[in-house]
Every structure is written in C-alpha cells, then in structure tokens.
Amino acid sequence: MSDVLWVVSHIAWSDVVDILLVATVFYLLFSLARGTQAVPLLRGMVLVILVAFVVSQMLPFRGFSWLIRTALPALLIAIPVIFQPELRRALERLGRTGSLLARRRQEEEVEAMVDEVARAAHRLAGQRHGALIVLERETGLQEFIESGVRLDAQVKAELLRTIFHPNTALHDKAVIIRKGRIEAASCMLPTSHNPRYSGLGTRHRAAIGVTEESDALVVVVSEETGIISVAYNGRIVRRLDINRLRGVLLAFYQHRLGGRGWTMRV
Image (cartoon, rainbow, N blue to C red; front, side, top):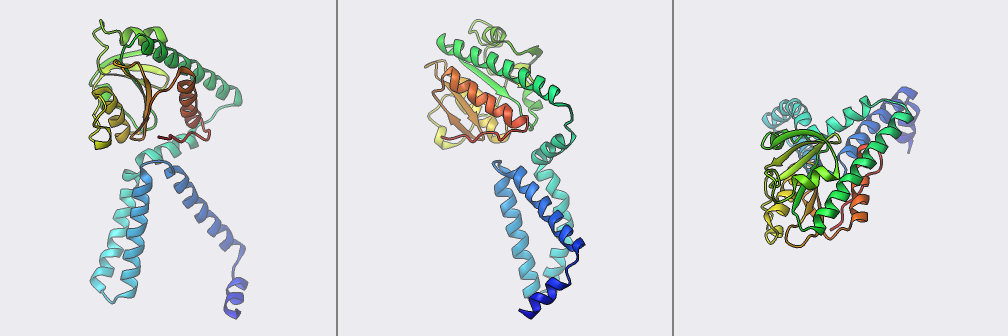
C-alpha cells in the first residue's frame, strides 16, 4: 500500500495528460477498426507483439531480443499499409469542413440519390431485369471501373433501368457509383469462392466477391426471381422491398456522413 501511495504522490499533472493522450489515440484507432475486416489483423498484430515482447524479456536470448527490437520499427512502417482504408477514413474526417447548411445540402443530395437507386431496383425487380449496382465507399474501386465503360453521369432511376435493360449493350456486369455519380457501367467484378454461397448465381457471387475485397455496398436484383438483395462485408441480405432497401442505403450513407452507420444481419 505504501508503494502505491508513493507512486501516486509522484504523478504530476503532465503525466495524467500524457496517459490520457495515449489512451485517446488507442481508442480512436480501435474505433476506426471496429466493424471492419481490420479487426482480426489488429488483434493478431497486438498478440504477436505482446508475446514477442514477453518472451524477449523473460528469456535470456540476446539474439532474439535484438531481432524484436529491430523488427518493431519495420512493423510501424507496415501499419499504414495494412490499415490504409481506416487511416484514409480518419484523415477524410479530419479534413472534412463546412457549415451545417453545407451538411444539410449534402444529406439532401444523398437522399435524392438513394431514392433513385431504390426506385430503379424496384422497377427492375418488377420487370425481372437483373442488376448489379456497386456503391463505392472509402476503398477505391478504380481497377474495376477501368474494366468497364466510363459514364460519369447523374444517378437517375431511368438511366439505371436503361443500362440494365436486356437489349442494351451495357446491361451485363456491374454499374459503379462513386461520389454520387454513375462512374462506369459493364464493370467486371471478382466472384466469391466462399463455399457458403456456392448455390448462388454469378451475379450474386460477384456482389459478395467485391465486398470481400472492399468496403463497398452492392445492390443486386435477381433476373430469375426479381428478388432484391444487398451485399456488404462479404455477406448478403435477401428479399428486400423498396422501403427496406431505401432504409439500408440511407443508413449506409449516414455512416459516410458521420452517423452511427449500420450493422448487417444475416
């Protein structure tokens, strides 16, 4: 007890501030990684560092201790590469400025775009026209955009319905929406090799595949059944009506605008 009192008596206010700053940095890092595919990587990295540090301190292995001290700087350099999407999101949030009026205008633009996508999916489902609409998030999809035909057009339900009409040249493959605009159509996407989804068609496995490699959200309309589905983070939710689809898309963009976001349930 006396040792604890001695330690407490020697803590200055600057030490308290220092501890709070370090705790805040770690809290922000974990908050950014929460709900993403970076969580397993972060856990594994922390576990490896802790085990290596404990072993190097407890065992009299000079060579191993030297290796750990030498490898830590390289690990710090690798962190920005491994957690690139999360760091990019953090920098975007720090650099995002504007008044409440500008934010409201942005929200109105998002709501208008979501309504266009939802209406297009609803009409395409009723006509049994297959569709694959990818909404880009923080992770760039440039390599998939380059595989298709560049459009750079305003998001309109009529345009999406025209693109996915079976008699048009661009109806096959995917449309990619970036920053509220239709960036490209007829884009090739990677298909998922998860055996859990082996019974799904090529369009649905492509939707899941691109979400396994990025943080994009994908709206899928089945050509055979007219069922509307949404894929995100390597998972898929099926049988959405227009209202549920609109709610999912609004929640998705609410997360981009700084809201709480949403959790996908299977």
